[in-house]
Amino acid sequence: MKIEILGTGCAKCKKLHRLVEKVVTDTGNDAEVTKVEKIEDIMKYGVAFTPALVIDGTVKAAGGIPKAAQIEAWLEEDTPEG
Amino acid sequence: MKERTKLLIMLAVFAACWFLPVGSDRFMSAVGEGLKLLKWYTQEHVLLCLVPAFFIAGAISVFVSQGAVMRYLGPSASKIVAYPVAAVSGTILAVCSCTVLPLFASIHKRGAGLGPASAFLYSGPAINVLAIILTARVLGLEMGVARAIGAVAFSVVIGLLMQLFFRKEEAARQGEGVVVMPDEETDRNLWQNGLYFAAMVGILVFANWGKPAEGDAGIWSTIHSAKWLVTGLFALALAGFIWRWFDKDELSDWTESSWTFAKQIMPLLFAGVLVAGFLLGGPEGGRGVMPNEWVGSMVGGNSLGANLFASVAGAFMYFATLTEVPILEGLINSGMGKGPALALLLAGPALSLPNMLVIRSVLGTTKTLVFIGLVVVLSTFAGLLYGAMF
Figure 1 (cartoon, rainbow over the protein chains, first blue to last red):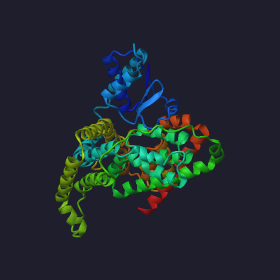
Figure 2: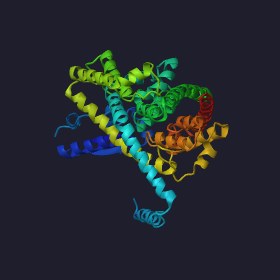
Figure 3: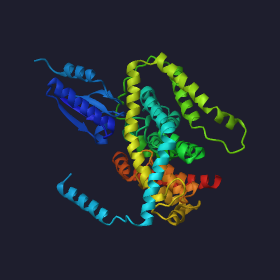
Figure 4: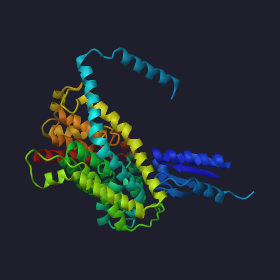
């Protein structure tokens, strides 16, 4: 699974990045977390409000920091069984 | 950071300390002025002005529907509505300068197009609530109002001109799909939110109600003598609204986002205040390291040259959020004219060398140069006009 954090580097974006990494480590998920900081790349996702969370190419949240439980739920939902 | 860079930094710091002019009167008094200015800010502006302002900014970023505003800036939006909305939406969308650029890029690429995007890019940083509140408080009400009106009016003009200059390319441009909106849900209706914001603004306005001139016995001094009573009533109302209409999660989001603003802005602002005091002198007209004659000769009075210089300098200089206010205050105390001060306020926060580069990556070189040119020219004229009026 690929998780991308979109954000130009403001405080909220860094916070979301830390939160996602923590959730991934805590749940023992093998997802790869990357940061997307270039504005042209952020635009490709159609996101106007940063920070945004993208899982496997789908924008899950934009314009705020979702709760940890919500991120966990998304991760579980998208992880194939077995 | 490379080891060599670290070594170079260390050598530079070493050299700076070695040659530090500690004995010099000029230097010592400038340090003193910096500290005096910092103390004055802390005592006069933090508790009653900045703290409520942080709460208002926090509330805006949590409770005001940003998606709703973007609807008026989308690809199908009416052009007549898009310009004014873009011009004023900075108040609620651009509380943090780092959010301006992604919004600008998406309005340009996927939304209402180049014109409204340019309008938003220009006015956004200048009319966010924190900037307006602090400008009005420190530099005087008329400067705060002039800044807000100037930024809004000019942003529409700049947007329309950009659209006009590049109309052929704009006609060929295709919208690149939809913008993803943030999810939103709320139990409060519009008037409840309105009252809640009105109570906060009421606290801010009345707690800072200025002392009227000696012997003035009109309505203003009556309000002044009752200001704590009025402020208290607003505070009570606010407490009531919070208790009745908000749940725990919303309150913790609100305090957290206010706290984020405070953490982001206070250190930079205090550093800016210290530097401004050191360079330009403190609140009682003491002297900083920069001679007043320099300031006077470059941006004193209200000549075309002074206004132009202030605009160009402002356009290239980078101001961290809100630091433009203490710097301008220092400049005004050292002899800067009111016109050039407004010119700098209008050109300054909207542009800086680093964000010109980002804008260029979105718009291309030609459009960026035209945009910068328009900002500089219009700010210069605004300065001339304001300088002639006040």
